[in-house]
Amino acid sequence: MRKAVFPGSFDPFTNGHFDIVSRALPLFDEIVVAIGHNSKKKYLFDLESRKKSIQGLFENNPKISVQVYEGLTVDYCLSINAPYILRGLRNSTDFEYERNIGQMNKALQDEIETVFFLTSPALSAISSTIVRDIYKNGGNINQFTPLDYKIE
Ligand code: ADP
Image 1 (spheres, rainbow, N blue to C red):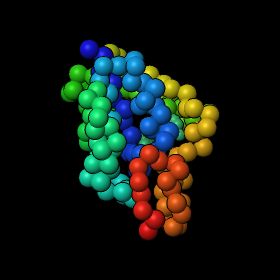
Image 2: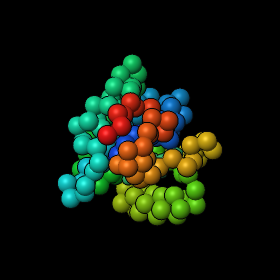
Image 3: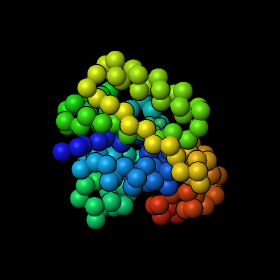
Image 4: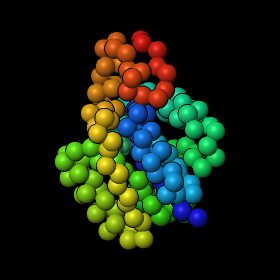
């Protein structure tokens, strides 16, 4: 039983995130999209709506579930018996950041492996941060996310 955790803020969940989950699916028996929650951090989309909307997206796929966690990702992985962490790499900035996190996670829990996916070229410009900015400024974000957001 190969179980993987795809951790992130998903504020909001984008086509880039969707692509990573879809491409990881043939490699794993179960994928948990895990929304990391930090009570000190401000999010644009509230936790419940992020969770519900991602759940809706994958409701026909029993291999994918959506959970919320707090604390260290590796601790969460251990608690649900998931030995793999999925992350996406868009560019060299992601690489430098993800390498450090991946190596630190490995130092914390040697038995947990991080599996990296190179972004699909057409999706490499998509980031939740920019999508949030577009949304906040009244732009239409629907081409960047598989979810249906109304323009505020
Ligand atoms: P975090 O706050 O943990 O970085 P995000 O929700 O921003 O959470 O991202 C979760 C993961 O998805 C990260 O590994 C990030 O690199 C990856 N990701 C984000 N956008 C894309 C994209 N367009 N293509 C591929 N991977 C992506």
